[in-house]
Length: 271
Ligand SMILES: C[S@@+](CC[C@H](N)C(=O)[O-])C[C@H]1O[C@@H](n2cnc3c(N)ncnc32)[C@H](O)[C@@H]1O
Image (cartoon, rainbow, N blue to C red; front, side, top):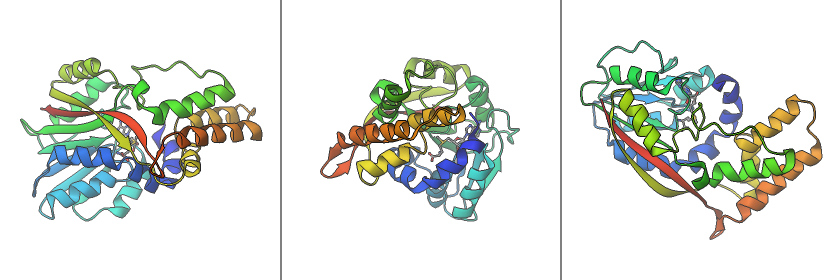
């Protein structure tokens, strides 16, 4: 996945994404339970919301390092974080980390995109002090996450079936299968506990607004981009995708707000 190319649309909707994912982020940070003075690694911090959380948790005597493959995300993360945060632009899979450096590592939705997951988790493990924990959150199975599947289904209704989903390749839904995730972490030398929770995402705004965000990133926007690149996209196709998603999100409204059920794995692994 070309995250540098994808950064611009992501950064345009940064506030919406931060708000939508907040329940998962809060759960992750509570589990990570970072302490004052620690050195913490954040893998794939994107625009940097978890760097902010971690910097607050470790305080001015601690140090937080983000490793982020896409320069535009790293720039934005540096802009919004305090002095005890640094962001390395590099691929976490093969970056030459200083060995045995970090007291803890965290990642919110940032570890599902490696070319070789076992190699990447093994590389990250070498950067950890003995016994230091890695906490990350990732999406559970697609069928439990309508935030992905509903826009994908709507787009398929307009454009026809998309490419078959490869559950082993880099992508947000890669670790839906807990057994496979356990095996990957174990092969990389980690001892992991995985807890799976149903949670409710709270993307801000009306169904119309949430659908407009999904016209910018996600499964439907990807299909729109493909049709545009092929020179076949029509206004009526674009309007139909948007209208279908407005309808889909309207069905998820509770007490006047869009509430999207989701399923997430929370991983605690020890080096
Ligand atoms: C889904 S985004 C999550 C961003 C952020 N953690 C958040 O939750 O807002 C995935 C992030 O991982 C980064 N990423 C993907 N592959 C990476 C790699 N191999 N090394 C470092 N960062 C990577 C992407 O550039 C992107 O910022």
